[in-house]
Image 1 (cartoon, rainbow, N blue to C red):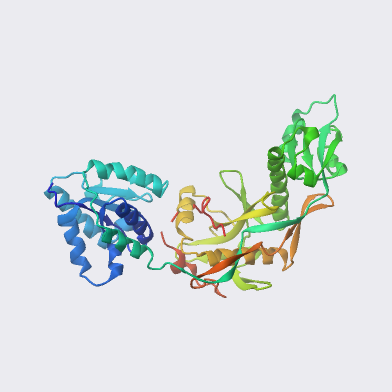
Image 2 (image 1 turned 180 degrees about the vertical axis):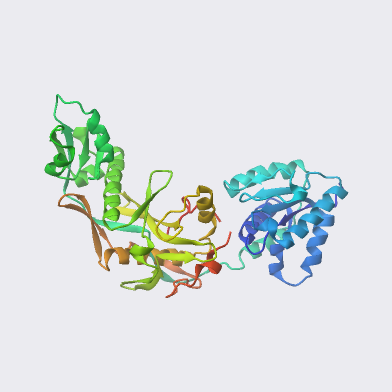
Length: 460
């Protein structure tokens, strides 16, 4: 291979994989590699068709194929694969084409033997595997500062600018305004076998958290005894002020603050699960054991749901249907309580998919693919409005909700979510439309969260 081949070419589907290509091209250029890609057309001007073809035939030392189910079917990408395949044979370089797998795909015949690099588990992880391949191929790192500046300009083309402040920011935290004044430790009276009790503690719908032989709870003794029955007599062994429990620990029970906080989170999780269930929502359990609670189409309907708190007004669908893909989508939330830095319930927006508005789609691979692709186009403004519409609908427009921690005792959550004031704003087009459009064309594009990830699902 001649030394004139000093570049890396990235072939990808436009516009689906532009974001990844900009990310990868920018990082490779920052590392000194000379990178060509179709996204450079955004600069306008030259005859890019001819420039890109010449780059593959005469300048590229490695041809990187951004491989997804959609990209390998696009005619423009297939044309570039054909040129790269011919070039690899001509220069006698069998490893010339390097597929970068972003999702499982059917490999075109020309590259069926090519070993791909897996970017599906994470872009940073894939980049870490790609760099040694480029190093072994002898791709020089001689990019000029102007090349790096060109990629930077591409990445900043649609960047948002700072504006005059202040700006009000809406969090995904609901403030905990009130808790019961004290919490109790309950144990089973001596002389009885508690083997059966452990299963009942685990399955208890009353909010409790296991501790030693018994459990901790805000609920009253008579309610707990009714649940465990006469064969498992209970006694209230100890109590602690709630503020002390969360801030200083429970010394008589040898519980440090770091031990008390997870127990409070566990108690609150059970309480929130019971609250959502009583409201008629359905659970979807994630791998970490957390539930996402979502409304069926019969519960929330596919109407626009308004919200109207002081300074916060709009409307959003909480359930929709994608005619193109043949499924319903449902907005839901996962919630858990935290005692710091302020007491709050933290929420993550989720999207659940059903076949008909109430039955979950059972194909795990299809669900995973939909989570990774369906909502990439949803901006923060839309996630924010969905969260506001969800809680306004669920609370009936009230300024608070009371989540039962036991009979007659509650955790009061303030609505809307906590807001913060930033000293400056960000100039950007608003996505908080008063009406939703059919989401098929706007939203079905190929990132991860994670996820919905998973963890990248919609944190506002």
